[in-house]
Length: 355
Length: 230
Image (cartoon, rainbow over all chains, first blue to last red; front, side):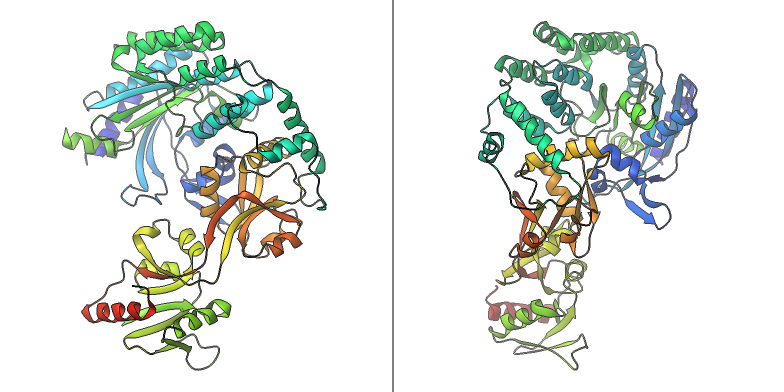
């Protein structure tokens, strides 16, 4: 089969880059994944259970088990390669496979994140060079830096950070903080202290927690709205969608007024230099500031994907990115910068057939 | 033979029998009260299958029933692709029930989904666990909350007495079917005004996949004409 050949070729390529071949269990502890992704993961991953171990999930991807493996006994720096089946529920579209192969590469390294990002990206770029694909990238780190740099309260920044991966909710929060959406009557009354209840207390959420939230709303209501200029800068940033070289200069312009993103934009610049030094011209790559916001929730820096140029119906052929924070959450107090990617040989083979 | 599936017990069965009876088609249980087989008179070529309302969606989707009476809630929860598998022929005007989100009435700070999301974030930060929602409608509730952008919640399964889970500290809030809201009030819960997940009532469904020969098609069109559901 064409995709088996491609899998072997990818694994050989990854081995040449210094990766150790690893495997991962098919059954994963559901609680770990639920804590990371929230309840939504149940819509995408198969859940099963036994009376002794509780809920288990059929692995929806390799990243979590590979990170767990590295965090428990990995040397540094480390490069891993893997290939195997992943399982995804397809409740909406029966034509999409619910079991398919992923081939992946993960790199754990403390030094020179730009070089690590470029190493991973270039490996996938080279492996897919023969296919008619569009390479796109983004940087969640620039978005989070922009949010952290907003002139507003820590509480508002935290609320926005929490919804970076839910663009619609993020937008609703921005509108509220900017005073663009009407404050619900109930909230006005709550802040004014005119809401009371006869209802007895019930449940685990304590009266003090309810009081604390009302106090938080009161404090927030006293805050000035997020300045229109700040919102405009954020909008300009989210709208950046250009070839990578042009995107970089647009971001540099925005950074003049939003200095908080300066370091992250320097990071992008260094990454593009590293990519260029591996023979890939930045003007051939698309950069979208919002790239990866809806589908790649554990990535927190560089994100990338390779899309079939003429097959908008297909999912991306390869995706990847940086997930430093994930290693901290799975590492029980330890963390290490990490970046990786996966490729779907079945989709690549489909394109090869039609190329 | 056209196979018609009807809930096998309780008010839903009685009201379904009434609804058909008013349209000249008599459905009845054959034999003893305990026997789950039925008879149809007033039209030929139709057989009655009595089964649990919760199984009727699956049987329609599998094509083992041509027609079935069950709630909108059950069809939407059990058949993600319901629009491709079944078609609604008639709303029967009973079995009204709304799938709603309900929180403790003492949560005066939570009135909208936006409040709920903020409360869930604070709850997780404070307790180190996600805010638990007790329900048996896992998929409908999950999709509703996802579309609303609510995060940091966990669904816990509750197949009955769901309103009691909050006082029993096994969930912080619930999503359940209610018709009058009486049980919710008795358990000191209130409905979130923008937390209406689904409006449901007993509905006559037709399977899009059940096989029919010419005779079956003729029977079905006569039946639907008589029911005024064509």
